[in-house]
Image (cartoon, rainbow, N blue to C red; front, side, top):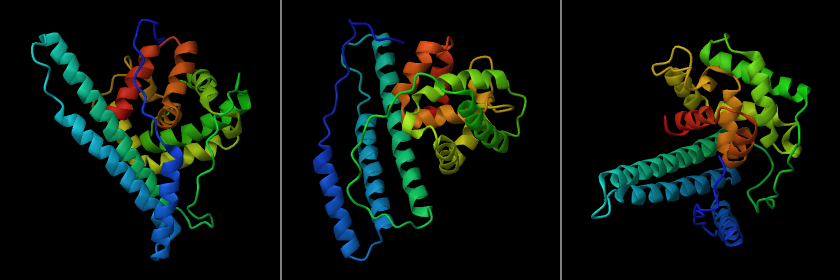
Length: 257
C-alpha cells in the first residue's frame, strides 16, 4: 500500500541514541561494580525499557475521551485508533521482556555489556536463491509441524512466498537466517503456540480463506520479520504479492490476537 502525497507524514520521535547508549553504559558499569553480572545488568536495563513502553501504554489508554462535538463515526475511529496503538505498545513491551528473558537464560558467553556496535542499514538483496529458500523453508517446516502437527500445507506456495519475504533479510544475515529463525521460535514459542491454537489448523477461530498464512509454515518466518523489520516486510510484500490483505490480517493475528 503506497502512501499518497496528500496524506500527512506521521510525526517522528527524535531519539538521542548517543546519550542513551552512554547512560546505558554508565548504569551497566555501576551495576557491575555493585556485583551484578554483565548479562544480569543487560536484563535489568531491558526490563526498564519495557516498563517505559508500559508507561506510554497507560497514558494512551487513559486518552479514550472522544473530542466533544465529534460524530459517532469519528468517535468509533478515535476509539479504534486508541485500541490499535495500545495493542501495539503491549506487543512491544511483551516482546522486549521475552527477549530479556531469553538473553538471561542463554548460555554464558564472554562479551560484556558495553557500547552497542553502530547500527548499519542491512544490504538489500535483489533476489534470493533457491538453495536459501529451501534451507529456510525446511527450518520453518520443522518448527511449524512441531507446533501444529499439520503437514497438509502447500509447499509450492511456501517457496513462492519465501522468495519474496527473504528479500527483507539483509545480505549479511542470509547465511545465519536459519539460526536466527530457530532462536526466534524458541524465544517466542508460547506466542506461536497461542497463534496457531487460535487461528491455525483446527484452531478456535480458524479461517483459512481469510488468512491462509496461519496454515502455512512460512508464517513462522513472517512472524520473525514482523518483529524485526515490519516496514521492510510490508514493502516487499505489497510490491510483489497480490494478496495484501493476507499480510494485514496475519499481522493483526500475530500482534493483537
